[in-house]
Each structure stands twice: as structure tokens, then as C-alpha cells.
Amino acid sequence: MPDVISFARGAPSLDIVDVEGLKAAATRAFERDPAGTTAYGTAVGYAPLREWIANKHGVDTSQVIVTNGSMQADAFLFDTLVKAGDAVVVEKPTYDRTLLNLRGRDADVRMVSLEPDGIDVAELETLLRDENVRPTLAHVIPNFQNPAGYTLSRPKRDALLRLAAEFGFVIFEDDPYVDIRFTGESLPTMLSLDATGAVVYASSFSKTVCPGIRVGYLVGPAERIAEIQRLATNTYISPNMVAQSIVYEFCQSGGIDASIATVKAALAARVARLTEALERELPEARFQAPEGGYFMWVELPDGTEIDRVFTEANQRGVAIVKGTDFLLDGGENTLRLAYSGVTEDQIDEGVRRLADAVRAAQGAVA
Image 1 (cartoon, rainbow, N blue to C red):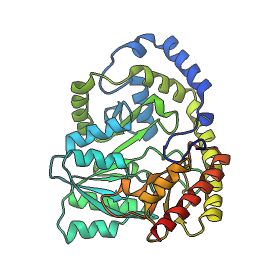
Image 2: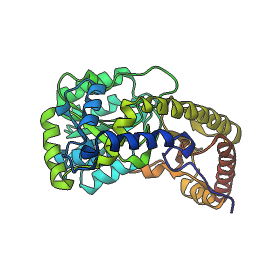
Image 3: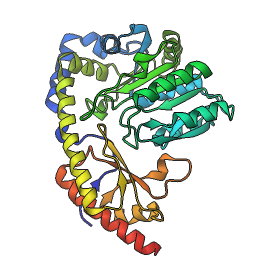
Image 4: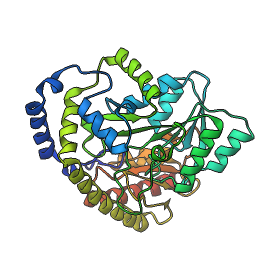
């Protein structure tokens, strides 16, 4: 079998990770603050990085907690807010680990359709008004959504804030891809627009520094962050201070800006190549090229069985993720393509193999 070309993992290829910059940041971390870098620290995270994040978002440091990756941040928020049976709104489709986390807590997960400009707020409003559903929170990935690659429009951001204020639910603004925009205009975060304390914001350095660094964070009302801090203290005393100290040095030196520029340029080129390859090899597929981020959602013709496509693709040495992984039901003809970890040459060959797998799967169905 040929070498595997993977469109499965949402991680940057090594050629766009600033390894030398990270090595220099690590050296500075140990030289400039050996005590803070090597100590336990406190549950809120490495103090200089916490302050850097607070300044980035224009909030007080009491509103920030730095965690071991954004998945840890998600888990802390769910632990403090979601009880068994609580209604929780998510996008349809949404990140598979979010679904696993919420279902593991026996939440009443309500999926609301995702449109090219974000979650269907009219459908959400019907759920709230006509069906009398009262969610604890609504989980939204506003920029270059995982898995779809779509971005929430400004009118929909305003509408979500209005509904959250009226119906008393928390908006969990999960935003790890916000800085990876390579076309279009940036939009304000819901956190920055929030006047009622309805938003808890999460982000990560996995997509802008490197995934192995495992540093994420939450920003929200100080009292909610204090509650999460108590949970974090009882969970692990403190997060990884070495990693957070390195990230701080990388950020404050300007290394992160250069890193983001490198990632954006590479991913913009890969999206263009992927779009061309899909149009050439799978003209019957439906997709929208994202304006940033790591992922593209692809719909194959009705009747195409993604389970068969997945098997045929594996046999041809191309890895994908089935769209059904991101849904509670439906999506049997959909898939997610991650273009962040493949080179442009691999994209052409990978899509050629994928198209061959689709044809084989369609033939098997026929």
C-alpha cells in the first residue's frame, strides 16, 4: 500500500512549526524565570502568560485561567455548569470531542443546524420560544468551525447575545482558530461584544504555536473563573508551568506573530490547492472554501455511503474523518478534510485517491 496521506488530523505539518523559535523561547524561559518556570505555581496558570492573555482580550487578569490545552478548559467549564439532564445547544455538525464530553455527562444535547454563516439562530429561537427548551449553555465555534470551516456572521453574533440575555444561558465561545484567518475581514468576538456577562471564551495555542505545547485558556466573568480555579486546584494543583513559560516567552518576543503569518500563508495555499483538486477530481462534491482555520466540510452526492468511502480510502492510503462522527444522526454522505498537515503535492495525490475511493464506494452501492 502507498504511504498514507492524512486529511484526518487537525494539526500543522512540521514545516510550518517554528521549532527554532520555540527552542530559543525555552532557553529564555529557564534563564529569565527559573523559579517560576520550574515551580508548581497556582491553578490559574503562569502569571506572566495570564497577564498577556488578559491584555490581548482587554480584560482583568481575574477573568483568565490558563489550562493544559483547551480541552481541559472545556471540561472544567462543563463540570461547573452541566448536570445530567441539562439541555445544551451545539452546532450541527460540531466537534466530536465536544459531543463525547457532553454525552459523557448525560447532557440533553440539542443540535441546531449549521449554515455557511454560522448556527441557524432562527432554529435556535424556535427551540427556545416554541419548544420551551432552556439550555444551560450554547457551545459555538465562531471562526472557521470544526468540522465545517464556516464562520459565524456579525448579525448572528449579535442575535446569539440577545437570546442569551433574554433566556439566561451561557454562550461558550470556543475560538481556537480565530487568528488563522487568511481571507475576508476579521469579526469581533462575542466576548468583546458581551455587555451582560453571558460569554465564556476559550482559545488555545495549539493552532498558533504547536499542538504539543498543550496550553489553552478560558476568559469569563471573574466569579465563574474563580469557581473553575477551585476545581482546577483540586484536579491538578497547577497546570504545566514549563509549557506556559515557554509560550509566554514565544508570545512576548513577537515569535507568535511570525508563526501565525507562516501558518496563514501555508494554509491559504493549501486551501487553494485543495479547492482546485476537488473541483477537478470530485466535481459532484459540494463544499465551501473556508476563509481560515484547518478544516473543510465536503458533501458527496446523496446515496453515497461514507462508511464505504472510508473503507475504500483506507485501502488506498488516504485518511479522512467521516461526517457522522460530528453528528448525533445523519451526515451519511459527508466528510471532513483537514488540510493543515499535508503538503500541496500531497493534496493533489490525496484527492485523486479519495475520488477513486468514492467511485469504488458508489459502484459497490450500485
